[in-house]
Length: 237
Image (cartoon, rainbow, N blue to C red; front, side, top):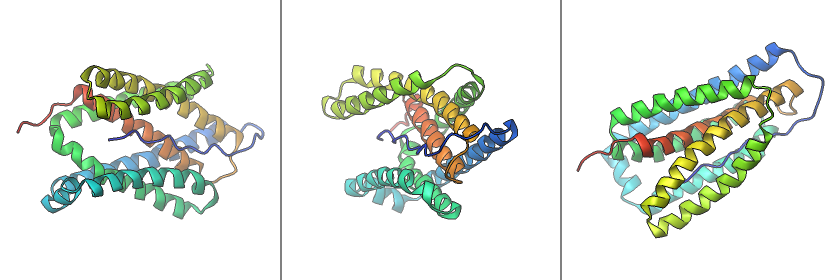
């Protein structure tokens, strides 16, 4: 499953710093949107995984599967461009549409790995994400360097993943996996700090919580997928 692109459109202008309560409220709204998106993804994935007809359509036809993956990419690009300018209802519908679409492709995860290992990896990811997000929101250290490095690392991981699709190198796959975990760990802290800064400065878009929710959602999902490669137990047969 390909790496989802980080989508946050950081449109905004610098204004007087806003009260701490406004920043805190903005982040909590963001986390609530993100959590709802993750819940929808999990629910759709479970429903698809338990539907033989849906699985046959999804995995029995490569065209359908790859079309869904490209549709996910299109959703992310469209959301980043459109969300700052549309109403909250439209932005929310796009966000949940993407979460549901991701759930369809995520059904394959439930077919490859045991439910126990998926659950344990999810909780590890949740704990790691929470710790890194808290760090990003409270640290006084500027994480801009981390963000710039992560951008180049993300490009490298994508290119290496494409190359390994043809090389089938287990060593390269493990290297990509561990780098991917570190990459999205850094992005989680960086994106949280940048989101906090945008709430403090004020944003031109009232949909900043939804825009931020998708960004953090993508950080979480990708960290989960990379950790699952390490911790996951594959089903037999």
